[in-house]
Length: 309
Image (cartoon, rainbow, N blue to C red):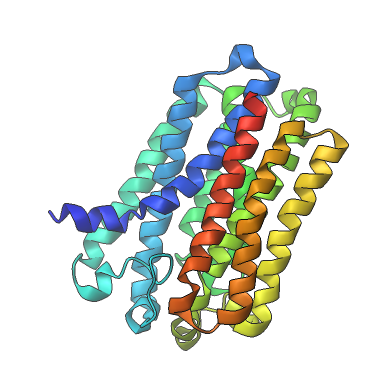
C-alpha cells in the first residue's frame, strides 16, 4: 500500500476545515450548558465529521476523474484540481471509490452511536449533512456540477455547528428544541461568519479549475459567471463574514471577545486584492488561496476561544 499517496488522497487540510465548526458548536454549548458538556462526545463528533468529509473529498476525486475534469486539468495547485493521484495512475478508481464509501460508513457508524446515546435529533442533522456530502459530486444530483455547490457549502457549515451543539445539549425531541431558542440563535449567528469564510475559501479554490471544469460542463458559479465577474462573489462572501461578525458583537449575541476574529480581516483583504489581479493566473493565485484558507481557520479558532473565555 502506498501510504503517502493515501495520506494525500485524504487531503488533511480539508479535514481541518470541518473539524473547526464542530469545535465551535461544542464551545457554544459549553458556554450555555457547561454541566452537560462532554469532551469524549466532542472528540467523537469531530471524528465522525472528519470521516464524512473524507468520504466527500475522496468521492469528489473519483467523480471528477470520471467526468474528465481532473484528467484535463493542467493547472493543479495544492488547493485545487483534486489530488491528481487518479490521473497519474498512482491509485486505482475502484480503490478510491471503496475508500470513499468506507469513510461514509465509518461516519454513519459513529453517528448512529451518537444518535442512540444522545439525541434522535442528531439523526436528522446527520442525514442531511451526509446527503449534501455524498451528492456533492455523485449522481443523480451532482450539486457541484449544476451550480448548487456553493449553496451546499454555505448551508453545510451552520449545520455542522448546530449538530455539534445538539450533541452536547441533547434535546429528547423536536418539541424540546423550542426551549433553546436563545442558544440556537447564537449558534446560527456564530456560524454565519465561519460559513461565509469557509465558502469563500473553497470558492477561490475553483478559479484554477476554470478551463477543465468548463470543458466537461461542471457549471459551478465561477464557470457560470466567468472568472472576472466571479471575483466579486468572493469579495461579497468575505465582506459578509465580517459584517455579520460585527453585527453579532454589537447586538450582544456574540461575546465581546469575538472581536479577536477580526485579526483574520487582513488575510481576507489580501486574498481579495490578489484575486482581483490574478484571477486568470492559477499559479500566482496560490498565496491568495492560502490566505483565504488561513482567514477561515484563524477566525473560527478566535470565535471558538471567545465562547470558552
